[in-house]
Length: 504
Image 1 (spheres, helix red, strand yellow):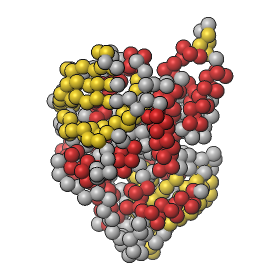
Image 2: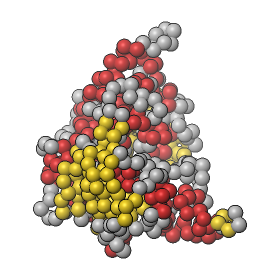
Image 3: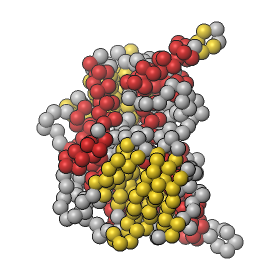
Image 4: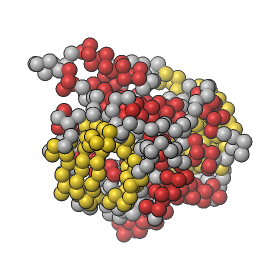
């Protein structure tokens, strides 16, 4: 059993946690819920030893503990899957998974790699990740890296395991497998602490739910058949929010093709991909881990060099060697699924992060950046996305994960792109922010006639926003779901059934 009593933690100008007391029991799934900045991840990091509390105490099985670092928490059988991607890119899968227990594979100063690789394969099979223990992590997708993190935590055989947004970037089938693993952990008596913004999965797997708001514990409730999503939202935000409303229909200009991709191929990633994107359209991309969706987006943007195929923008063949050309010449933007490594400059402030996409537009003839126009744009974006910050000069790595995601989104909204590729836009954001981002994406197509490609592993999100969905499997588009904009609202069950058939 894990007990937290009167835990407090303060950062400069922010009381992240205030006298939080909560108990986590063996053999239960206990979910922490709250808006971005409510204190969930801070509480997890206090338990893991990443942060030391300013006040309060932690007890494990009745004994008082105080972790000075994450190593001491691991030594007390506490495993932790971080919200953000935490892998060593240049190392192999096996090296990442056995990192916390190298001594178990060492003899006379050498690692027994046959033993380590065999051990790793057990946990790759458990999370159903089809990579080799000897594969280097660097080129893998965010979803694959997330599964490696989960496998690493499971490999510790911990008595307490903490999962902070573990299903972010995972599809429903991949999340379902994770829930089965969590069920087995629960049966074995493990303490499972679960953090998620996805209310459906919270209600599905939780035994108890503790809700945080502004660093304080609002309350802990037993999850029973009487608990509704609306009840949880009201506890989180203190007001009612209408969830999962159907967004409506778009005035898609089917005679105006703004982007056409023909026969795009990137060896070992995807092959012979072709599609059209129309003005005023939200086109969805859905597929399992490794299906090639994100790699396709990055190849379109010039991050990867294609092996075959052509791309046409506004009917003219385009040559896009890098992202700068995509933005400045063709007005194509990209909200990355990996905000930490690709979407943000963490050591820079909000102004630099948001302003970087507009510098080419506002720069003087001498290539100087005028401060006031940049600041005005940044403040507008902070207000528009309701980013919780002390100001536009606050360093981004001091923001919560959800607010970092909003900054990643804000910089591309500021860029005023005609075509925006949005990759997992609501990973790690709370329900209120998620609804807000959905509305922004919708308005780009509906009110501004922009063209949007929405890559998402969140099927309800795709069905809610996309008016056409391309289904990816093993590097190919295996099906397309049209008719989502024909004036008849399709149910989640109808669309998900068709997607399931394509992926079968």
